[in-house]
Image (cartoon, rainbow over all chains, first blue to last red; front, side, top):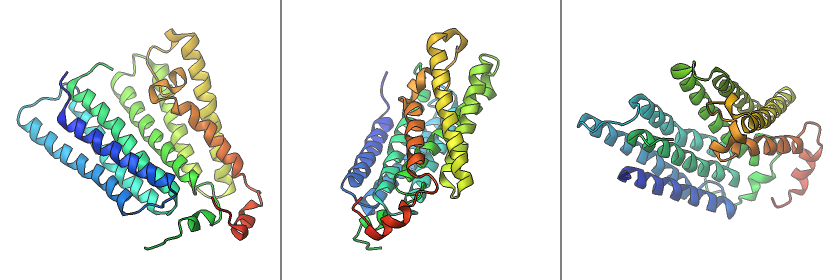
Length: 123
Length: 155
């Protein structure tokens, strides 16, 4: 199986964001520009991934699994950084950075499932 | 926005939807979303294959949604609703986990709670234990809420 380049890029962005946010929580920082921007990078990646998926599918590259399942995952994943950001900034404590870190982990898992659907990897 | 005293927010009166509680609610929210989507998918596309397993996923989804909302809402009534929801979750994950281990044929298809939530990194097993512990620490009637404000110990 050839691992998709977008998937690798997404994994790096998500895990980097999670590490930054968890690290900030460990040193008792409330959410700051760096942690919030790292979550914004996750959202930006998902947008790029989505646009690229539209282009790839329009160009004839078929999804191996169910297309609606893939898009269901992607549209849900797009909401996660926004929801996490909203929930985190309502209270500026270091725990909110763990909430931001959970965004990266969650989107990572969802990207993993999206990759499985795209290449139809048996579960 | 330049608040250079991070401990300040931790010293403010503690509620169960504050501090570590926010992370707990966030994780519950993720599981509410995942279980709801999974239940909708399973019931919508292949309900006939394993009705019991899929109904259990739906039950798990309801419990997670209820727990998420109840943990986030203030007040004594929501506190007890959250105890009920998190307790039901613990009973569910232990029961389904045990039965899926002893009698795998009765559970031909996975649920969120199968094998104590192994498919989800055992988070479904750990989550209700942490949840009940957190609710116990923040039970109504604990007078520590006012005193911590005065002393404001480092978190």
